[in-house]
Length: 329
Image (tube, rainbow, N blue to C red; front, side, top):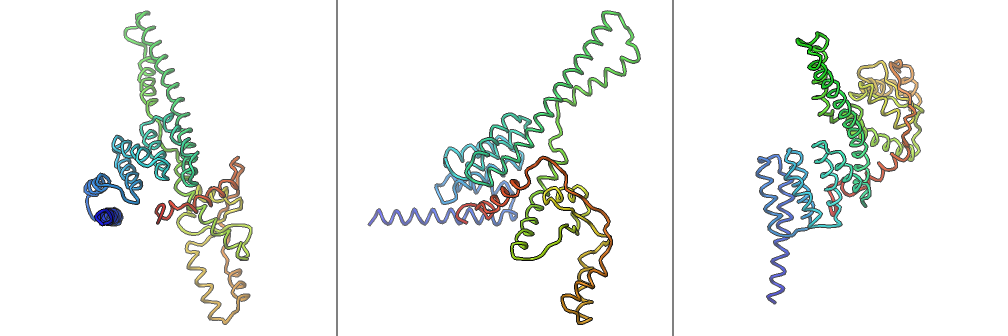
């Protein structure tokens, strides 16, 4: 009887910690971040609850977002120690890779991303694949920068030593110009642009565009007839790079029309059809008569990327339970 009572009390405490953790996440904007971190850390130390692994991962990812990489590593490593085999352990590999990448330790980052690519969760594998490609590019650029810096220092040393031996005092005007330039190049070689614009565009807009294309595929599967080209409207359509990325991902031509408010124009077409008492065919005729001219077009490029496989991986990621808040949600 006492044992059963103790078990009931323990279960109630576990449920209370779980409810408290979810409450803290929902109300995160209502208090200073440090206070939420303190309370979540206390819940983790108080004992187990169903999303204990998620709480540890959340602490690590929050610390990483705040720039506290030491704390982030401590929490993310703890996930793997306390919950081996958990899906949140796999997510922690991505966080550890990101922490290394922020410190420009791209070799270490790629080791973590490789582990993520071998994970069991499709979302983790896809994110590992994307992050590894980014890190690989930066690692290559970093090595090129180091090589350029070494060459610049070697040339600067040659001028300096040569000038001393030849007693070039004062130094020739050409040398006084070249040496500062080489010194600046050597200093710049220690820093690498952390985010090429193409990579940023792909990471930020790629997911949204793939989701739009998935919706388009669903319409086709339902028997909706779609034309062979895509008409882009809205704020994103103003970006030539975004339109080109959409064309590359869809394999179809993407056009923009000579109409600033295309959505409002479509509403006017519908209103005109209603006013005229037109049927569906009449609506289509009005739309064709009022259709504006094509302003610009983006055609698919041969990028060497397996777009079919990419879209299949995206579909697998979209089905991951992590997208809806994690396991058990």
